Length: 440
Image (cartoon, rainbow, N blue to C red; front, side, top):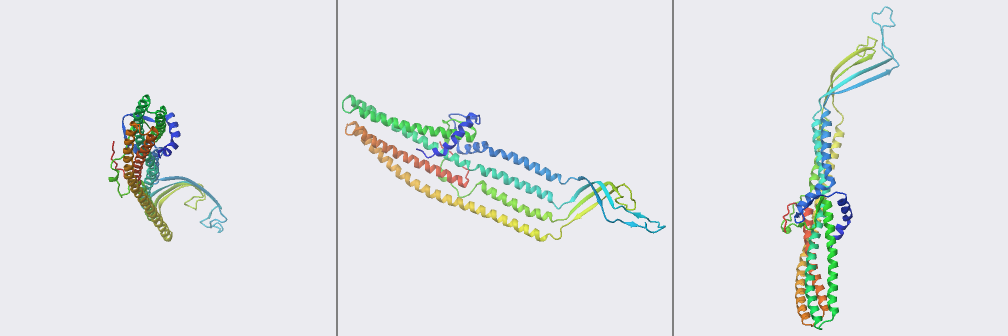
């Protein structure tokens, strides 16, 4: 009967399972209230995706430590063996020569080498900034993933509000039928009406009771779903507060987390340009070696296994890499423009949705005015028929026909009002307006 049923029912089985297995934490007092903003906070805090924020923070810290460690001296153990076709030979073929050197065709060397980066052009600090920006992108994506949960919460709040209004209507109709039934029973005792007229009223009361139970079941489903989403045992007597004066909090300013994500993504892409610049700067290393070699690694005149040591400064600079650098920058600019396109598309889609909501809300406001007029007329007619029934002019069947028509008119009015509230909530949600007052 109410259009929030399908929204809630697909989660109810999962919800009941989690309730049984202990997924629900401390309950909210039965007579307390829960605002929409409070529910947003509970849902987002309870959702598993939020736990990834702590993981991302740990990853960021680990990555920063790795970047910082790159400035530490590097000590490596190295070795090599080589065999060559020719070797240096001096004076060995000259009799009586004071110099006689005849190097072997093979040599080997094992040594330790230590290097320390004296100047890297700011690469380390740049990588740290890039890492921070990339972590912001990941964390903002989490908030973007959480945002659709608000749509579910909006539908539940609006659905429960409508369901409770319908229950009030059922109670009012039942009370009226009780009065008519009491009169009918008196009329039967006086022989004015047949017993079947009382039975017809009783049948209608049972039908309304059945409709009421269906609505109550939908409310239970909605609260069970909300309990799962929030991780809190929310009693069905907890009052769900809808925002007050929704028309006055509508704003054209977009406050969605997607916009923050676009901003961070663009900053992350553009930060690569800075990295390209610093990587293009000279690189200066301090190094030292110590080890053993055969023949002597530093004095080739000593053809023997001997220790050696050396140290110095290394300098490197890319000279013929300018074209690649420009191509990389052009690629980064194109990726940045692509993010701008995605953001413009996102904003345009919000404008399209907002225009549709505006049209739908205007139509609902018109429907509410008409339904209100119809409900008042049907109520006046019902009052007149009640008098006629007491005078014995009409039967209970005729009265029930009008009673049903009057109930439908009031239901249509409440459904239209609930739809308007839901559309206003959705309008606020697509713009990301989080400043919501509440009403009782």
